[in-house]
Image 1 (cartoon, rainbow, N blue to C red):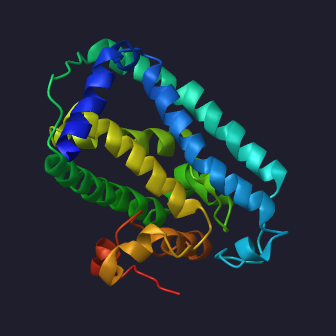
Image 2: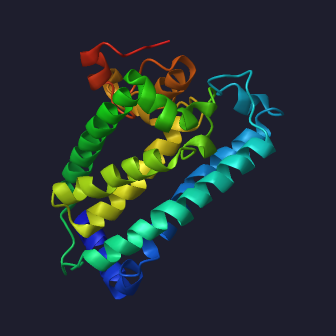
Length: 253
């Protein structure tokens, strides 16, 4: 049943494969998915100062994000996509010849590849992130922009400079290619990665959050990353906690 569903989805994608082959697709897909995932949290950020049922789930309850700050972050994200990401996707579009298989991947293969992609991306980001905190020049020059806000909110997820935007975008793009993933798995990984990144920065600790669904404290989630923005020198991995545990950089409030 699940495999049939995936095949149906993939057949629909193949019918519209001209979208995937367009040089505009990557930037529109990335930005559109990001804004779609941010939207519910933007609504919550607007309501939270007035609705206790929402504000009680905020990690830093004394901090509320203003319209002006949200607008600044939104403009910054659009600027990064148009000025930096779009030209590179055009170059990549000219260079990479894409071929789409007729058959969809098996659902178990998709699940396996998604977990593997997340683990590999988590490692890449951890190394990059820790270096940009441990080396003062790297932090001042490239990463400090992202730490402008010590209390996280969804629209600050992609508030970063050119180098950080392109580095993390490169890791996300190259990871499924290195693992030889099916194009449908690639798309699903991009969606999942954007969602988890937004959730990491959302500033809320809901009962249904990902870190509460993954057992044994293996996944850090929003509290883990919010604490990183607050303390700066801990919790470098974006999603899982094992690398921070191994390197002694895990901080749990």
